[in-house]
Every structure is written in structure tokens, then in C-alpha cells.
Length: 404
Image 1 (cartoon, rainbow, N blue to C red):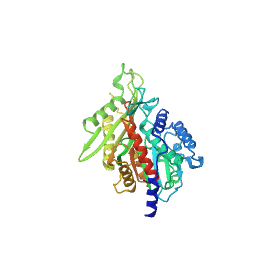
Image 2 (cartoon, helix red, strand yellow):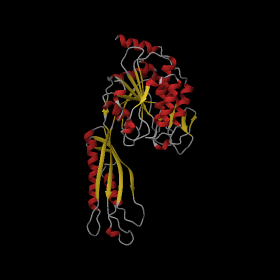
Image 3 (cartoon, helix red, strand yellow):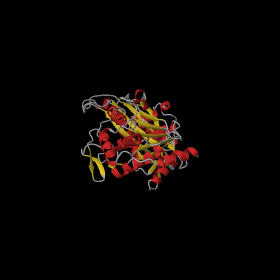
Image 4 (cartoon, rainbow, N blue to C red):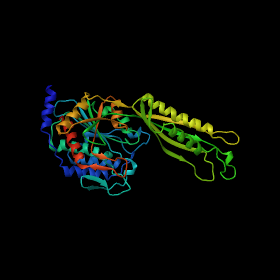
């Protein structure tokens, strides 16, 4: 009790040292830096430079080697800033990912009224999740510049979130300092607490057919494209593609990438497909995966040439992240709800159908609740950042960092 009261007393004195205009300028600069998954070095360089300017010693932050162990083999690992406490309390961790989806490369952020948008109508904004990265950066600068009392802290800027939560999956846990309360900042409203998320499975499907001349001897070929088409149609017609509701269970699936064929006068002999399945129920998610595989096997057996030869399919898949669910009584959830209430807002609770770094952090034994930073219409050219909500997220983050 004495430790908690000390933290709360210190938090009551915590005032942002970073002004709202300064924070807005910071997030604008961050969103303009290209940084698709695996190419985050320039973003990390900016964050490190800002930390050093604020007086953070170089010895306080470091990179892990997550990028060397992810499928992308990217430019740089996760950035970790670890601070000893100036008051007693459990270590707290704030996290956000720094990569953006490729559509955001080339973003030119501009303010338009209450929002920030991309001046280039052909790109996304990149508020997902540069706004989260800016929230963490501003909180760290607030603490150093304002010499604010705080419990032991870890700030974690992760890589490659958009392609499978790889930064959080491969983070070096020993570098985090064993945090007991963890708060992830990503998309959406800052007063909505994401206490759970779905699990995701991704797969690559290789379809092998038989090539032949499409004009002279098409009957001798086995079209891999035809196999793919029949399989996808099967999934759609039987309710196993898109939003799936079966026997009281729910999930989603999507065939997202199709690659194959080089000429119209050749019966295509090879197609590669990338697909995914999601569900909060691991058993139902596996059922979706099984149905996808069955549809492609049926299609391969259905398409044959005049010699009665058929194509074949091969599947390779992996679990990207497992689903999780936290209770309102979980310490990180209760602390986040209290910080939101202290800002005069009412916390709400939600479960998301998208994956977040919290999936893997929770799986690593660090229960993590996710809060938004005002991002809207993410992953589209209509993406916006609600400025008021971004500033609200900053205040909430500072309360969480200082123990409020």
C-alpha cells in the first residue's frame, strides 16, 4: 500500500512538458518517414535522436535482434528504453509498433481542421501506428524534460507488426526488465480498452497444374488458375470465405494474394495463393483452415486433361498469433481504466478481430491491454488522425507511465 500511494502521489504532480503543438509536430514528422515492415531504420533513427535531444543517455536504450529472426530479416530490431524508478512501484511497460502498411509510403501529413490527413490522395496517412510511436516518445520526453517521478519503466517500439506481429513475437524478453503492467498503443479511440483479440493463421497454397499451348492443345493442360477459381468459388458458396458464422461459432477467412501465369497462350501450370483464417476460438479457426484445404483438394481433383491427369496442391501454414482475453480485474486493465477515468472519460471494453502486439506480449507472460491514439480508417487512403484524441492518448499514457 505504501508503494502504491507513493506512485499515486508522484503521478499527481506529473504535468506534460511537451506542448500540444510540439507533440503534433512530432507525430507529423513521424508519419512522413517511410517505414514499411522490415524497413524501419529511419523511423528508429528519428526516435533515438529525439530521445538524445531530451537528455536520455544512450546507455538507457538499446535494440534487440528480433529483425534477424523474423521471416523478413529487416533493417533493425525492436527499440527498448529501460528506466529505473525514482519512486517505488511495479515496472510498467508502454509499447507501440513503428512500421506502417505499404500504402502509407509517401504520406504527406497535413492538418485539416480537427484531423490530420495525407495530402497525397493515393497514400494512407500512417497514423497506424506512428501516432502510438509518438505517444510513447512524448511520454518519455515529458518524464526526462520535466524530471517527473515515476516507477521503473520500459518503453518498447516494435517492428514488423503489420505482417504478423513479428517484433512482439521475437522480442528479447530479458531486455524488458520483467514488467508487471503493460499498455500497448495502437489504432482507435483512446478510451476503448482492447482486452482481447482474435488469433490468426496464415497459409501459402501452391497449386501445380500442367502447361500446354492454350491455342493448339489446351485439352492437354491442367490449369492451375482454374483450380484456384473453383476452390475460391467453393469457399464463397459454402460460407467459408469472408465473415463466417457456423454452428454458433464465428471467424473470418480471406484469400488475399494470387500469383500465377505469364501469357494468355499458355495453360498456367503454377499458382501461388496466400490466405488467412481468424477466430477467437482456436478449434473453430482450425476448422476454417481444414475447410480451405479441403476446397482446394476437391478443386484439384475436379480439373483434369484428356489423359485424365489432375493437378495437385501443397499447403504451408503457421499460427501468426493466438487469441487472448483479459478480465477487467487484470491489473493493467484496471490501471488503464483508472487513467481514462482520471481524464474525465468513461472507459469502454472491446475485443478486436485484428491482431495486436498484445497477442504475443500476453502469450509471453506479460498481460497487455491496448489503447488507441485517435486513428481512423486505418490501412486505407482515407486514414485520419483525430488530433484531440491523439492529445488525450498522450495524457493517458503519461498517467500510466508515472503511475496515475
